[in-house]
Amino acid sequence: SRTDNQPATTVKRKTRSYVFDSAYEMVEFGHTGRISMGLLLPSHCPVTFKTDLVEVTVTLKVEFIVDRVSDTTNTIGENTSSSSGKDPSELGVISLNLPCQVVHSGIG
Image (cartoon, rainbow, N blue to C red):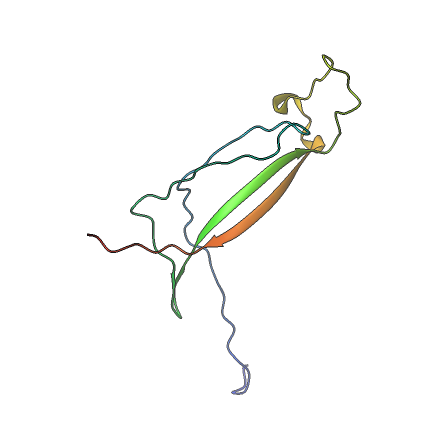
């Protein structure tokens, strides 16, 4: 039983999740200095807001799939590291979730 001096706990439950846009870019280790990608939010994308009962957030999720095994020992022409032929244990995933604040500008 809860006493009056203990605060009530709040439980957050994720009810829906949508993907608005996605992009994929293959980069070569040691040769790619930077990349740039454009992602679009549709006009019907929900705005960011929060109340005591409901919270709507938009998050930019970036995943880097990386080789755990270095290919630097292979000579040119012997490189067999294609993502489709990799053993999943040789691949690692680095995830980055960035919260975004979405607002709609006035029409006109």
